[in-house]
Image (cartoon, rainbow, N blue to C red; front, top):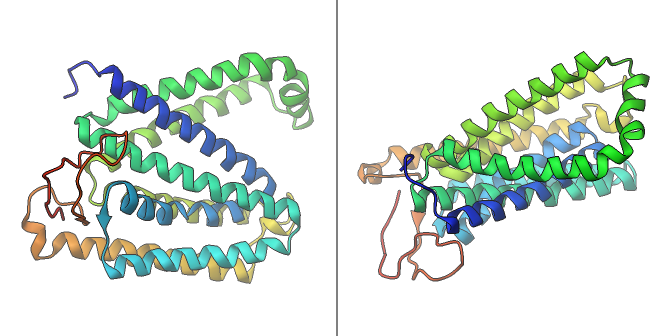
Length: 295
């Protein structure tokens, strides 16, 4: 429960999961600067695909045919984006590759977070606090050991070129911190309580990416960067395919939740495959004698 102390074994697991996400976000942000925000937004939607696949492999969930159709549609839209990125040069292509791997690792964090929270009955706020402390510790150490020694080149000079005051910069950082806190709390609540768990969180992440795609196309196209910033026909087709795939997946999950089998308590829109428990080190709650159907 939320009032009990967290075992060290669980804390170690959370530290490991947070480390995975630090690597994932480093790859995502690096890839974003190389590929541009519009390509990043589309590829980042693959979190949905990776969540579905990893939930099948790690949480032993069996999805319906319609859910898999939605997943494949998302993957098809991402393929269109990948093909288009090749023509924009090696930098954009390599950035797209980084975002693809980073998205997969980020999805892994979703799935492992769901596993830990549900098998330990940890409340989202406590999990978020531990997770955030790990990230803050890592990034603070990086700032002190690397960024501080390159402060003029990495921070002060770009600020001067953009005519950004210290007050304005601090205001932006505080705003980002507040939005990140709200994002983390809502994300972990979704993973623990929302139907579909980690994969539903991935679906919402895809919708977020669509909004980012549209906004950055309007703001940056023709003003910053090159063609990778703009809304092209190929990107439009890719975006439509991804959005339709996301909607198909969400509708399929909703249908399962509202079907006859939804009368079983504790449903989450999936069928759990029979399992015999000792498959991994993350204690995923698949006890040896358990052979249940969880919808």
